[in-house]
Image 1 (cartoon, rainbow, N blue to C red):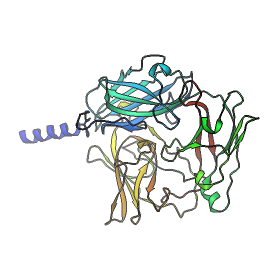
Image 2: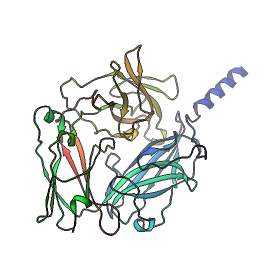
Image 3: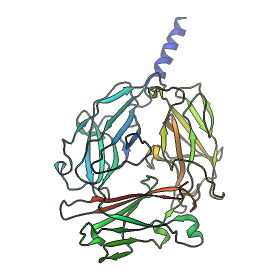
Image 4: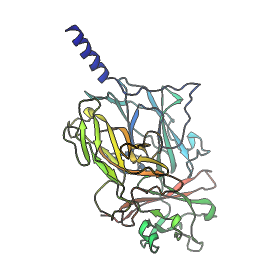
Length: 424
């Protein structure tokens, strides 16, 4: 009887032990700041940065309207002392030459005081959240979180943008192209008017970036105008080459794990005999030869939601198992979406199972609704090899216009607009 009790105590202890431990910064393994969306420790999960009350909207806000909130989980049982600071970047996401006082109205270090512990979850974690401090200048920014005031002991970094619209936009809604080019691509043509801003050399001092579905992996950067009309103060962006067009892609695949007791769409089954639970999605296959199908999704985004308990502190993490029926391809296959910040690394790289003739992947995710796609990184195959690409696909675009004035000598975000292709 004593042995049985000892075994039960041991199993209970194991079930409540964090899956991963934070790795401290050391001289032998220093962390290096990368000005992109990244978690620097395996225990940091579910990083989100969004306008307050709108978790699926871009982390973009007008100057003077300060409403950005950051949230993340640390898969540990104890609370840490974390702080955050802001880095100003140029249009190409390199660090600008500005000093903190040039763009910050307050001291550039914010303690993260808001936190709560998970309750009765298979994986214990601490949930953190805080409001970002205001900035004085429009532009690209990165919020960096670090431990115990040590700026080298990095926890995470996340990009956001602040704009001050000093230009106006007009959009050409026509898709240009013929044959297969028109079938695969979506062309974003527009004109920028800068009559309220004196730009001496638009070809050199203006930079335009376009982002599709809040993605960073296929962002079009440093685009140049096709025509410059100095008298009218207009810059026309019209893309004739299919290499400068966005691939329409396909609607995102998705799965619903808002409930672990009653799994939702595209979840095949849940193994509840282990903790964390193992979720197995319905087996996927290539969609490249299928006809385009329209359905509702979130353009690659995800939401955190729990149907099993009203209180989000009870929200569980679970291992999600992906499978893609296919012969091996000449390249690497990744599971991508906003949930992994559109990064391509070992955390979302799939392995090929020759016995079952399929690619498999496994990721630890928090309860919610997730969009995802399969991305191919290859010298011979297109990224959308398994998904297909169609001009009818509903996509969400953002246009960012940067100008570098004489002072300050940094790129400022002077124009921002959101555009939708094939809105439903």
